[in-house]
Image (cartoon, rainbow, N blue to C red; front, side, top):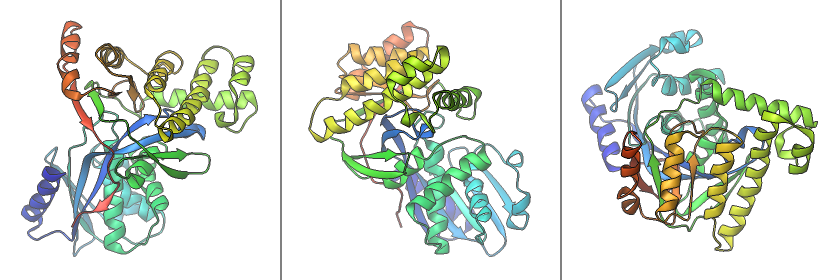
Length: 375
């Protein structure tokens, strides 16, 4: 958190000529298990990680919002007088997220003053660790505090989601935003998407190693939309409101082909989340559940890729007790438990090099607290 915090504060002072009104941080997240279940009213168990996006924010005397990214060394300014005419194509891709928060708050009928926003982050972009939610949540929390809006965590999660789905064009659920807001040290956040109820679950699994394949994924792409549509078709064919209500027996008997595979993943993944939570509470083993989740995502949901498969296979071969892709898939990161990052760093790059693939980034993360004000 240190470098991102210093970078945001110092650059704000340089650009604006004064200290910010405050600093706010929101973490990225790792989804331990429960993938592609959120938009099926299912269960997931993410946790906030110790990599964050920091926003230095301050009021402006005019009706403008200016955002600057220290990571990209780019800035954008837009007038609040034209808020109703803001359209995503007029904004750079990264800027759609912070400006999307302002847009979402305006859509809800709230009055927003002019702002300067300076953004710094150590959450890898487009890696499946939810850098976008870290950004939208951090901006939401900052605006909520400065304006005294009094939004609840649930309302802030929906605002951040609306910024992504309604403005940035990312068809996301609420998993990332709730993890970024509800996270606590040493705990995962069990989310029931049928009710949006959350519950903290002790997460005593040792270091969670992230293997970033550096293959960029894009949630706004067609693959995500195709799978979401397939789940909706499967639920309709089974006569249930969502796949959360379906049983494995119904799926096997009532569906065929691609719809059966997609639905089978969702139904079995929900079961794996339940078993994982039970095992964590009883201090049992969960590695096999993570690995089973990856197999299901690879074979039934078909959202893995050669780099993710190689990362998982290599981690398991060299001491991990469980490994899986995390996030939407089709690129991004895998995670492994039961092994040290340094140990895997001695083996995994060799396998990637032998396969002619780009060297992955390997680091450990720990469960941390959710979005908060730093100063």
